[in-house]
Image 1 (spheres, protein in one colour):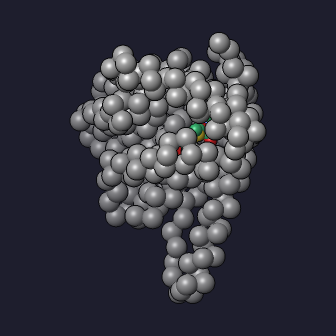
Image 2: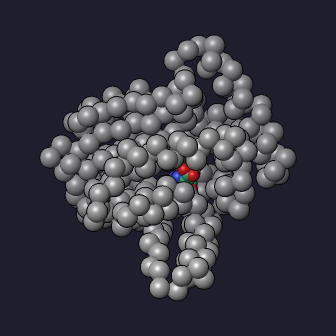
Length: 250
Ligand SMILES: C[S@@+](CC[C@H](N)C(=O)[O-])C[C@H]1O[C@@H](n2cnc3c(N)ncnc32)[C@H](O)[C@@H]1O
């Protein structure tokens, strides 16, 4: 079944941009509702895999409203969040201002470390080769016209020894669980989208995009092709979500 926001051709980026402009204001709330709050745990795992060390520079691609960017910055990484959606970045920047104001009220001397948010295309990252110690992408690769190009770019801007972490919807290996999970994405998730965001189609997009995305095993295969080391696939909720991890060789 086709979806208003999914286009397999040259229209892909424009449609995805429309989608996130439509849902930006409600994005955080809907994430909590559709995942029962679990996305917060999964993003925490991403940050653990990033293994931030003092002085590290991190790039969080497709940062959206900034959850992963904020978490990386909070534990000391000098972080840049990059996204092509103006509306999603507006929400991220508003959160940043709010947290700065909150911490200044608590302690006027405190220096809060927030990410820098910039607009850009994850398929043409506006940074030179070997720039970052950490490159993350949460729920982003699946939305790119070419997820392979996105991964190529992640490796290009990563420094030798850098950690690359990808979080996205996955494809559970167990056929019964996959059926149940796809039924959730087909029925409950669009219903939640309709009730709380007034838009079922924007949330039906998740299943449509996942059908066209080869998910965790293909991402691991591509990482092997890119000669990354210490490659790992971490299935969450029986593979309904997955983290792909790899390191750029030194
Ligand atoms: C599902 S959201 C994920 C947001 C955030 N990473 C999170 O985990 O909550 C996907 C984000 O990818 C962004 N995006 C999609 N295609 C992009 C591209 N080619 N370049 C940059 N950002 C892109 C969208 O604007 C959207 O904010």
